[in-house]
Image (tube, rainbow, N blue to C red; front, top):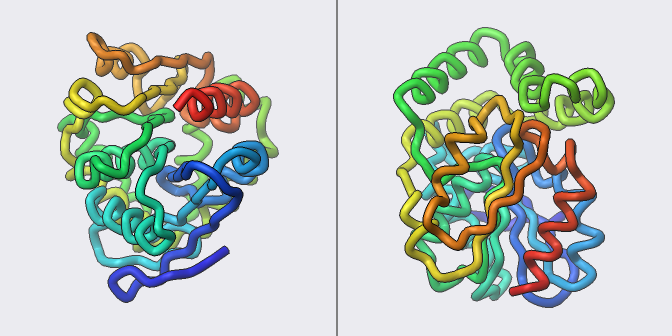
Length: 260
C-alpha cells in the first residue's frame, strides 16, 4: 500500500505487476480490498492499480460532497504520479460512475472501459430521493444502515448461501467513515448522465450486469447500450458480481484486457 496527497488529502493505492495499466475502482461502501482475489491473476500480464476512493478505505475525506468529477480528478492525479498515460478502467457500481467521469474529463487516457453492475445514466428523481433517505438513515444509525445496505446488494438466494462472504463485506464497509458515506451519496445524487459516452467513444467497452440486481434493474440498464458496440455480459445473480460470480467475472475481465 502506498500513499500520496491530493489537495492535502491522503490517498491510499496499490501498484502491482508490469505491463499495460489496468485501474480497478471499487464501489460505494467498498475499498480496494474488493479486488484482492483479482489482482494475482490480472497482474501476471498487466500493471494493476487499485485505489481507495475519497472517503473510503484508508483514503481521507476531501469535503462534504465527493462528486464523481472530484473522484476522477483524484484518480488522474494518481496516474500522473505513476507516469501512466493510458489505462483500462474497470469500475464496480460507484467506481463505474467515477470511470465514466474520468473518461469524459481525460479521454486521452482511455484505453478501455468496463462497467460492472453500474450505469452511465444519472439518478432518477426516485433514486435521488432514496439517496436523501439513505443520508438520514446513516446519520440516525450508522451500523444498521451499513449492514442492511450490504445484505441487499446480494441476490435473495445468495443472502442465505454466502453468509461468510457477506459478513466479510460488511466488516470492510464498516471501516467507511460516516462523512465518507454521506459525501459519496451526495456525489452520486448529483452526477451527470453520461450515456452518450457509451455511444460516441471509440475505445473498447464492456457492461457487466446481474439479472437479479436489486440496485440497478437489469432490463432497464441493458437498454443503455442499444445501438452500440458495447459488449454486454449477463450473470444470473445480484449487484456483487465479483463475489457472486467471481470465477466467471475474472475470466471475462481478463479476456477483455487481453484483446486490447
